[in-house]
Structure formats: C-alpha cells, structure tokens
Length: 299
Image 1: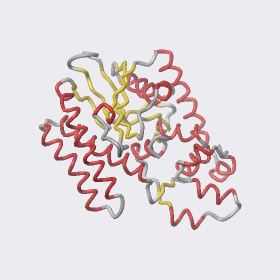
Image 2: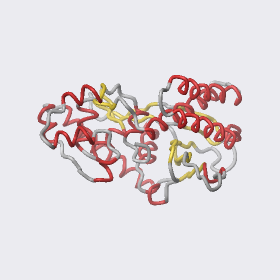
Image 3: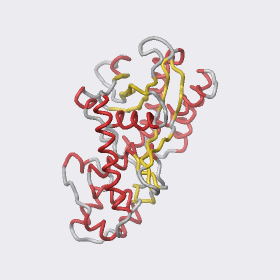
C-alpha cells in the first residue's frame, strides 16, 4: 500500500510541478538549505530526548542522548558548524525551560506514524512529532498532539488559524481511537538579536488550541479529496503527468522551492537530465524530511 502523506498533499496543493519532481520523479536535493538542515536536526534532537524519556530514562540521561546527536553531527559536518553549535545551545536552553513538562505529560507517542485507508492500494498517512496525555494542570486528562516548529519568528494568529496540519492530525488520530481534542505548536525561535539577548518567553512559544469540530471534518475531507487526485496521477502515464503538471510560478512559493532552478531550466526548453543527475538524488521517503521541505517556515 502506498501512503500519501500530509506533506505530499501540501506539495500537490502548493504546486503540481513541485509534486511531480518530488513524488512522481522521486527527486530530492543533495544539498539541503541551512533552514532545512536546522529543522531536521532539531527535530531529531527533540525526538531522541522524548523517546528516551518515554523509555524510562532520567531527564539527565535523555538530555545527554539528545545533545550527543547534535555533537556527532557537528563532528561529521563540513559546513554549517556555527548553525549546529547554536542549535545545540538552543536545545539545551529548551530542555532547561521545559523540564517541568515531564511531571505533567504522559508521553503516548514520538515520531509515530498513522494511516487511514483510501482505497485497497492507497492510504493517507501522517507522522506526528509528539503525542501526550496531560497528567496535571490545565487540560488535565486531555490527549494533545504537538508539532515542533523551528521558526525565525513566532506565528501570528492568522497563520495558526489557517494551518491545516493540526486538524488533519486530530482526525487521523481519532480514526485510531485516540480522544484528541487539542493540538499545540511547539515553536522554538532560532533567531538571535544583537542588541539584547531574547528572554525565554521570546525564544519559546506554545500555543495550545482546539479546532472546531466542523473545521476538523472539512479540512480532513479536503485532504482526502486531494489524495484521490494524487492517486489519479500515480495511475496515469508519468510522461503525460509531467506534461500536464502546472507550475504555480508565484515568487513567494518559488523562492523557497528546492526545484526552482530545474523548473526554470525546463521552462527555457533546455535538457535537465544532467542537472537531475548532479544536483539531486533519489528521494528515500522520510515523513519528517518531507514535512520540512514543504513547510514554508523552514524550506
């Protein structure tokens, strides 16, 4: 069964051509942007931390395991050493800030995947960052799905309201029997300020919110309809899909697209074969990677 992820649907709805390059041709850039590299490593560090806690490790041990991942990456990396060092320090500060969460959270899942069947051969799928049950304080007894965001600036209210990710995740988790009512964006601000250091309140922001039932239902229905259109693309001739895949050609969307140069080369009528071979690799599907690629805040 082929799984059509939340991020694949986002790619398709953003630009058919972007979806064609990434999912029909299975291309991924060999060199990641700094924002993408930061987001991937940051997610890996947080996942290791919460996985260790869930497995019964002490907070101190979990912290060592998580930070070690960043330190290994720093030893192996040839570039972006300053970014990695800054990210390690940011994660240490995050652990200090939120260590008390561990007394009020029961961790139900870390980087866990869920699917909802669409047809016999296809399913809609998602992979959450963190799922917890609140064991004390506000929202006691609730199950909350949490999505980590490494951001330059915190999201404003409009960006939170119009983000479909949490409603999609809630609907999928309910399909699997979880009583999730609320989601949370766990925002970690990597930006620094020269004039005066940011306070913890300016570095870390959590926004728990409860989408309306109608919003959850409508968002998920649209997600499934988009997935059905994607299925039609997979079942069609790839050459014809490539010719019919429209470009959005919007400067905001194209500026962050990892395929913008190959797309422009193709528009000019030039052969893109060599570019595909030298600048791209086969996309070994990874949900976290895809979520980073198609998240405008990170890509």
